[in-house]
Amino acid sequence: MVINLYRKIKRSIQEDGLIVSSSGFLVRSMVGKIDFDRPLRILEIGSGKGPFTREIIHRMSKDSQLDVCEIKTEYNLWIEELIADNPDKHVTLFNGCVTQLLDKPGYYDVIVSSLPLKNFERMNDQNAFLNRVIEGFRFALKEGGIYLQYQYFLSNKADIERIFGKQMDDVDFVPLNILPAFVYSMTK
Ligand SMILES: C[S@@+](CC[C@H](N)C(=O)[O-])C[C@H]1O[C@@H](n2cnc3c(N)ncnc32)[C@H](O)[C@@H]1O
Figure 1 (cartoon, rainbow, N blue to C red):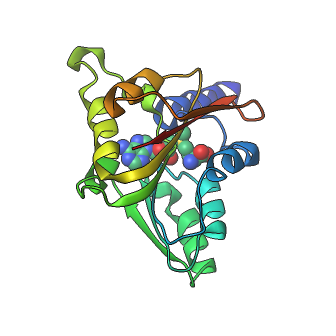
Figure 2 (figure 1 turned 120 degrees about the vertical axis):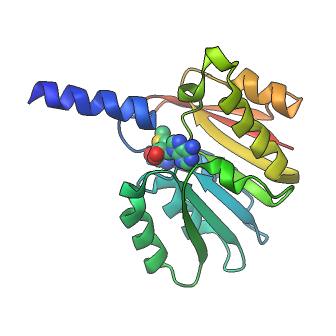
């Protein structure tokens, strides 16, 4: 039983980059950086069971649009339930790798990412996939749009700054989360 639990936790960290869903403190810290006073096109990536999705849907205006991207179909039920509970909001779930959604230049006002960027590092190809994902964020964001990302241990902050060509606008620390997390804000 203990071995099974250990395997489950190890798989969860390797595949999803986390042990349990993000805390309300982390969700509010990140979503609180979005100005919902105007219509927005929002991309949420790596929704998992939807802690961020729920809060974004709650706060977004009826003339905003939320695209939710999650590679694993096992989380679909959670997101589909949120969509069904909010028929007055424009929310679409995409199953697949986020790179498929980053082909429209300057399309999104806001990108909210829970992607485990650290897991994308592959030294043998000079982090080609990691770079492609961050470059895709920059490409798909409008001028003045905001990219929000949480990470543990300040990881990949330098990669994001290099690709956006500027320093992070803001880095917040949220201790009340498993694990304590840093929230990055990067405007284009
Ligand atoms: C760290 S979990 C975050 C889950 C949830 N947002 C939270 O904070 O509790 C990362 C999520 O990203 C998803 N993911 C990983 N790689 C992805 C990719 N290339 N495209 C879309 N989703 C991906 C995983 O399946 C996982 O659900």
